[in-house]
Image 1 (cartoon, one colour):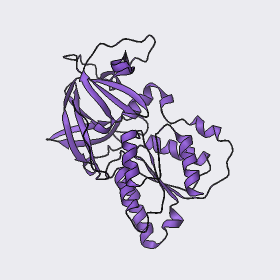
Image 2 (cartoon, one colour; image 1 turned 135 degrees about the horizontal axis):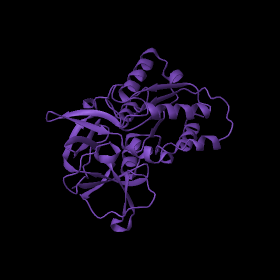
Image 3 (cartoon, one colour; image 1 turned 90 degrees about the horizontal axis):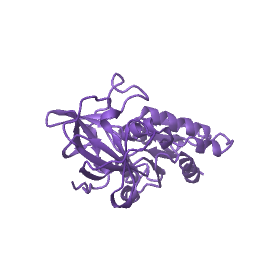
Image 4 (cartoon, helix red, strand yellow; image 1 turned 90 degrees about the vertical axis):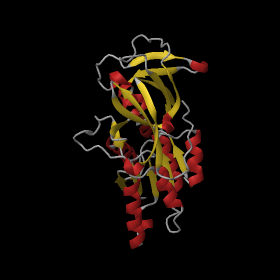
Length: 298
């Protein structure tokens, strides 16, 4: 299946691939996908995590295959071999085994509903949002969380902050847009350890933009924001659209924007550059994030 669907930069839209496991509907951002193929022979790896089926090697690239059925705790037996959705995020090539692939839909981030705390308690849920397509509810899965649960070392490299050593307190105000409660806490904890204690945290690009508009209206934008750190994938407004709004605003365009996302690959980096992002880093590189902020606010 061709997943090379190009979206105009900063439109606040995404392409969602809908797939099923045990007749339940799930979704993944097409920007994460490299390839979709019928299930192929997988080589088991001794002593691997139980959710890992094994590895395969198409075109001389070794890829780890993960059973989404096991990750989601679904015990029904599959009716067929299914498909492998090969993804790339956080500089990792990982394939997810699913039952069936339904198709691709273009949606707006404003259409994605953030699960409330009854469905997505901090640190436990694996859903980033829910969307209604053709009268069906599609659960958008948090693939970063699924992979990090298998191997925590794949998540934020908090140890990188320790290597920075003792740092003095830095009063430069930072505005953060991150929808994951777990990642938001990890990022703020790391920034505080690095000396950045004047932090304003928002849940998505829309909340961040609303704050910026408030600061712009009362003339305090330079006092309240020295740098913006934003994820890309967020309900209501994504990080690319937020970057576009900031960089196209005559008053706010001088504020540095750092995109900090698992989706920073070559194509996404080009998009970020075209939108005017001042720096772009993948999610594990928390130490490099601090270095980038240091350079932009000093």
